Image (tube, rainbow, N blue to C red; front, side, top):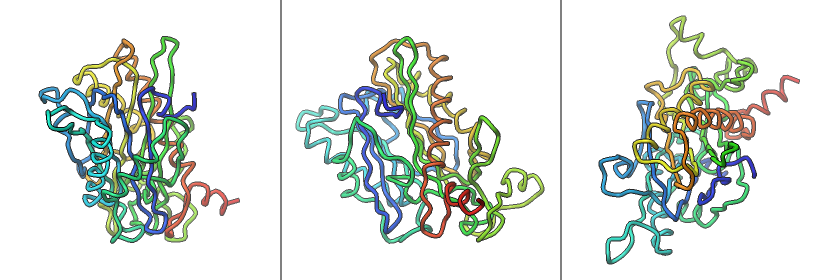
Length: 324
């Protein structure tokens, strides 16, 4: 067991990263199909193909999930995921072919790197080619390449976000994994200590964190262009769930974001949690929700601690290095 979302049997993950343009995408493949659910709490989401996740929709299973940078432009990368899966005969059978069902969600990273370069069909396909069930890279990779956090005072005072993953396995054999791309407006908190790990700094060259929520309580409003935030989450489990239960699990997993991001689910964020249930083991939904929230919180912290500073935005490691 690697302690990553790829511990869930039937789930493969791949990244495509452009370090020069500072953007990328991440794909989760479930070629045997998974029951999906979604819960969106932020008010600035950008998504594609969410209808099949509804309990009222004809399609029962999804075959992949795309998370991408590039704002709404990045949704194009889902076409590459569909192409990859169709070539392998994966998808909803419509007689003449199989149509891969690939929900997608994006984050805003256009102001960090080269805004003219966005995840596209080719990047989506390459992410699929790189997909593995083994250990994956974390930090400033894939959809997390251009992620930032702490944008109350504008991008000039922000810090690097990133991509993190975790997994937990219960004695019963139930496994839950989380993959989180942290691009939040607010600060990221260590839930064990209450310490702010990354967030808005006290100036473009500042080394001190100002506590976004505390500042907002005094009436401070977002400065500069702050509409560039979103935390995207994939929760995968080997539990056997219905669409209704998968949606409920996504709602329960939101507690993991509430523990680690402050403030969370703002009008400037597009926070969304997707669930992929491969349906191999019976499970208690409430207990599963507790574990899912834990996995999400752990993945958020990993995303911040493993991020790399570039594009003029320092990381957790950079800030600690400069202070010592």
